[in-house]
Every structure is written in C-alpha cells, then in structure tokens.
Image 1 (cartoon, rainbow, N blue to C red):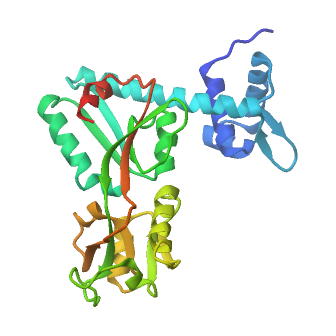
Image 2 (image 1 turned 180 degrees about the horizontal axis):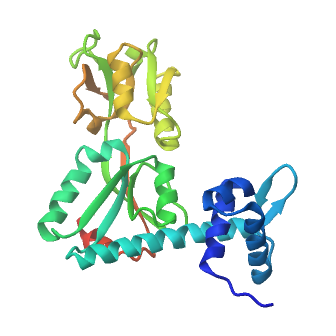
Image 3 (image 1 turned 90 degrees about the vertical axis):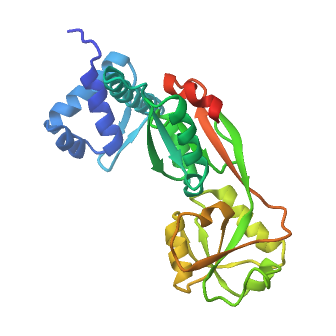
Length: 292
C-alpha cells in the first residue's frame, strides 16, 4: 500500500520532536502511543529517512530530524502569521510587524519609530516583546519576529544588522549613596562595592564590555546578583544590594530611588542595532525600513 505525506504527519513529528517522548507527545495530541508510533514510522518510510533514534532510555532526533524540525518551525510559524495577516488585511489593516527588543530600546528608539510610522502608515499594527539577544535571533530565524533591537557583534548568515543608536554607560547607585555628579570621577571609586549586572545571557557582548570598563581601571567587579531585566537590577540597587552599570538611556521610564551618574573618560560605548532576516516576506516590514 502506498502513502503520501500529509499535514498530520508533520504535526505528529513536531510533537515528538519537541517532547522527545512518545507517550507525552501522544497525550498532547490526544491519540494513542502505538498509533503515534505507527504514524511516525509511516512518515519515515514515505520520506525514506530515519528521523528519530529510539531506545529504551530515550528518544533523540537524527541529523535529518534536526533539520526537518528547524524547517517546520519556520513553516508553521509562517503559516500562522500569514493567516493572521490575511485577517488583518481583510479588516482594513496594512498588516502587523512583530518586534523583539531589549529594555533600553523601549526608552527612546522604539517610541520614536512607532510615532513616525503611525504618521505615514496608521493602519500598520505592531506587537512588541522584550526578550534577550539570542532569543530574538532565534525568533527571527523561525519567522516569529520581523525585527529585533539587540546588542550583538554579529548575526548568522541570512540576517542583516544595522547600528542605529550609540549610548554611553552610567553607574547606578542608591539615592542615598555618597557619590554625586560633582564627586564622581572614576568607576574605580566603587571598586569595593558589590555589583548587580545584566546576565551574560542577556548579551555576552554587553557583559564583556561592563567587565572591561572595570578591568581597565584595575579591578574585577564583585558580582553579587545578575538579571536580564532592568527593573529587577534597579530594584536591587535601590535596596542597597549593590551598584550597577547600564546604558545611560535606561535611566528613563523608571520610578525608583536610584541615581544615574554617567561614567567619564572611558572608550566603551553601548551600540544598539536592528536585525532582520534578508528573505522576510512581510510587506509591512519593507514599508517601514526607511524609518530605520
């Protein structure tokens, strides 16, 4: 008996590829485990390749399975987005642009962009999500985001990156700290303090720059806490648990008892870049690129 590949095969494959467990995948799909196993075996027979390595202890993807999962991630995300765009266009919208960003971008860069776009294209909608650099890259590759605002040195092949804002660094202190704008001369003045920093998961490039700011002044910071959220970092500083170094633009939009002192006489700058996929097929994205 001959079979043809069907959409359900891909749905079943993705469930197993994500769970790496046939029973859990079967429960998720509301089918029996033997039935799911037969469907996967049928799919492998149709394609002519093994997609999973199975033994009594675990299930893992073959190299071919890894490739198929990556491509289906993109295809399913693109289908979902295409259907959503179709509904928006039917209602008179010019579509939606999905934006990923780091916290500092929302202070000035993104609001300015949205205001300018809205003046010329009032029917374009935006969705925004604050996530880390590397999750933005992954989401753009999978067609879950259209553009990202990141702090990275480079991006994978098939993506473009353009620096759009260069910022200085500031020291964040509790309001009652003895240092002030008039007495702050060097980051070395806080070399004995504990530091609260953005995690390297947020941006390894950014984390390395923070470390180099301190090391250039002859000390390695004693890092007591890390976070990927500015609000958390500022709250810890406010509570007296350490000091922080952040891009200067992050001082806006928070109502906490902390103060920001721009760090003088350092070469390090914080570059914010926009990234996108070269073959992005969202027409709304290309309408707004001139604003970037």
